[in-house]
Figure 1 (cartoon, rainbow, N blue to C red):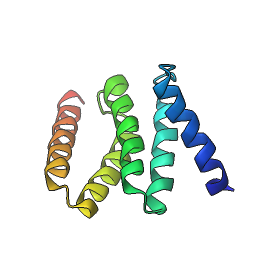
Figure 2 (spheres, rainbow, N blue to C red):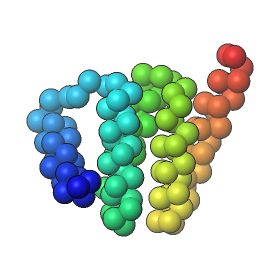
Figure 3 (cartoon, helix red, strand yellow):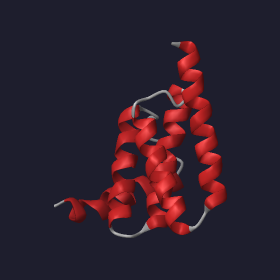
Length: 109
């Protein structure tokens, strides 16, 4: 069932991006992007997975300054994919950003 819905749902998000129609930048949207990223990663479509994980992370950073509980899961998924693809520079930059976010969270609590 999940794979059957993956393509239409993915197409919906892609078309909405291309036409300029934007989904509400909400944590639920980030969760959906994260789930799509996970589905593509499990199919071995790493570039497509990275695209959706990055969209999720962008929302979480913009709306929650990276302090949403989902941020760690999305960042971990992205780091894993960057490592698998041999993109160590991107992995390093993401890890550095995430450490900064975590340290800011500790300071503010």
